[in-house]
Length: 166
Ligand code: HEC
Image 1 (cartoon, rainbow, N blue to C red):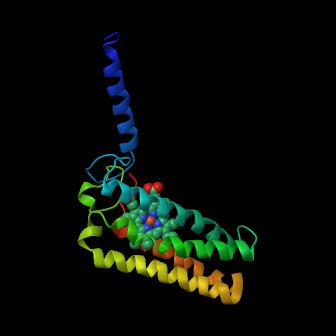
Image 2 (cartoon, helix red, strand yellow):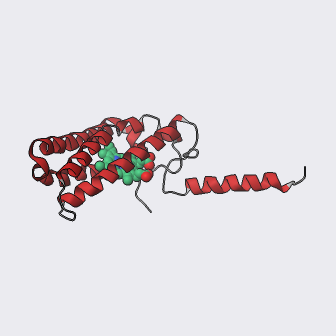
Image 3 (cartoon, rainbow, N blue to C red):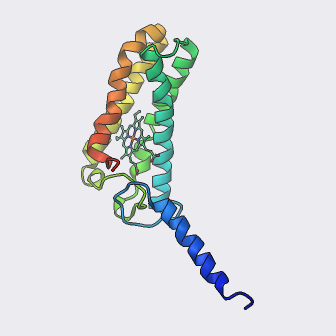
């Protein structure tokens, strides 16, 4: 026992990490996002899917609004990637929220209204697929007008099922 404070220091470091992990806005009660539980794994999965969806939606929107020059190949790829992400949304919400990590912004209503939640995910996928079909047949010009509606499906789900930032 050379240093009796070592254990305390380690505990302090762990507490700091737990705090950093848990300080994002969220309603869930359970453990940390890095825990080895089905709920934590589901949280990490949906967070990844959502971040990909957002990373694709942003350049799609910017091109549709004319903020960046239209590039047919880039637009088509981003739209197809968005379809892939949309198709994975429901996979991230299988584990029950009652033990979701504290950092999760998923509202418990998801699990009490699963049919409605899944329908909104389905609307998202259908909208993205419609956009992709239009782009495949008519290119950027055919898809441009559908982008706003597709993006609206993100907010249509978040309004009911994602906790707002404080
Ligand atoms: C069917 C419902 C639904 C749809 C559709 C949806 N989201 Fe989400 N999104 C959620 C929920 C619920 C959360 C909170 C997840 C959590 O924290 O556990 C979330 C979280 C996020 C986050 C935060 C991720 C993080 O880092 O914690 C981003 C960004 C996001 N969504 C972007 C999008 C975008 C962009 C779209 C549309 C292309 C979209 N979402 C479509 C339900 C949805």
